[in-house]
Figure 1 (spheres, rainbow, N blue to C red):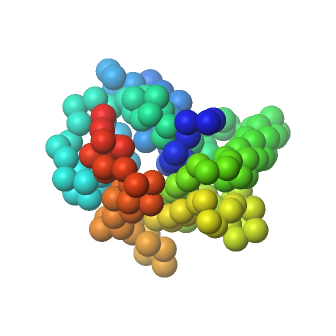
Figure 2: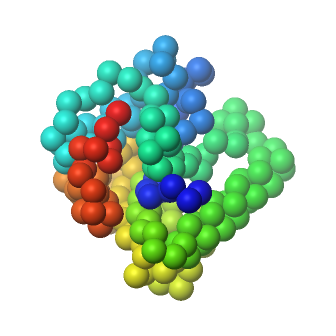
Length: 178
């Protein structure tokens, strides 16, 4: 937790078996690149000015302080049980508490990127009250898979990657290197 600089939270799911590796927008090496990852990384390339990475796993970001959270990892798309509801609620509370604590570290900046309109709402976070605004930059964009008309900020052209790096005072290409 001490090294976390960026938290990306999404509700994007991969439906093909064997695709997800447990990190948001990340996929197993032998899986076909998921469409949401393709759209996410295409915007990264456009924004930062890098080439599309060959690797599909984003674990190296975790090692450099970029936490990747998928709010949908605990439920089954095939059957819904009471246990699924309980796990989702516990996971939601854990993520909210983690953001709260990360935002209160002294002399540590934090960027929180919500990808998906309902993600921030599902955490019941009041950004101004729960996260320290002097320490935290909060960015929100639509889920790249969302094809329906939306009032939120589209991922494409949002410059979330360069905005995050600028707030942290680091080189975007170094921060987002894969």
